[in-house]
Amino acid sequence: MNRYSAMVATFAAAVLIAAAFAAGAQPSPQAAPPAAAPAPAGPAAAPYAMTMGDLMNTLVQPRHAKLGLAGQAGNWPLAGYALVEIRQAFAGIAKAVPKFRGYPFAELADAALSQPLNALQDAIKLQDPQKFAAAYDQLTAGCNACHATLFHSFVVIKVPDASAFPNQKFNTGP
Ligand code: HEC
Image (cartoon, rainbow, N blue to C red):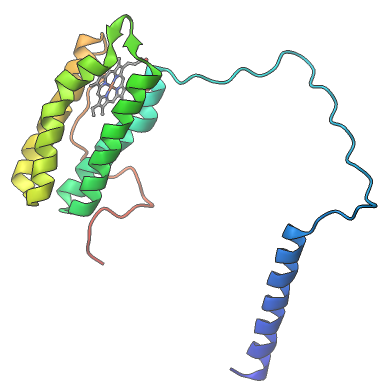
């Protein structure tokens, strides 16, 4: 390390220490108390309750895609993880929205998905690309079967042909 880089390193360390100190610094006892926040005008904001469509769009669709992309790439640890995540997503949705237009979500999801999800689990354990592809097709058919049952046959799920996640790696190579 030459003289200049040593100086830069010392300076960087000093900045880091100062920042840490500032973050943890307590106000002195003499400091004036903060002024009370003014009462908010108008009605209080209502918490936003996710609809079934929101939950499908945010929890289920990306997990279905990630599971497919990981399996296509033979990335079995990631596929196993995505499978757990998609199972958890459905379990969470069943709790949050137990009924959709009077239909029991958990029962319909179970009927549509439990067999393909178990087949996917076996394929991942066996690290078998053919079994994975077949079970993934069944899973996707299960998505669409429930959409048809619940008046959304126009929401058609398919096997992903590209990644929508430019910041995540699905293959295991370099
Ligand atoms: C138990 C029934 C059921 C299953 C199983 C199911 N869905 Fe859905 N899905 C719905 C319903 C109902 C809607 C319409 C919800 C709404 O409009 O509020 C929907 C809507 C969607 C939408 C549209 C959301 C949007 O805003 O674009 C997507 C995407 C979706 N589902 C993905 C999937 C995928 C992927 C699977 C399979 C892994 C799946 N769904 C399995 C019931 C199901």
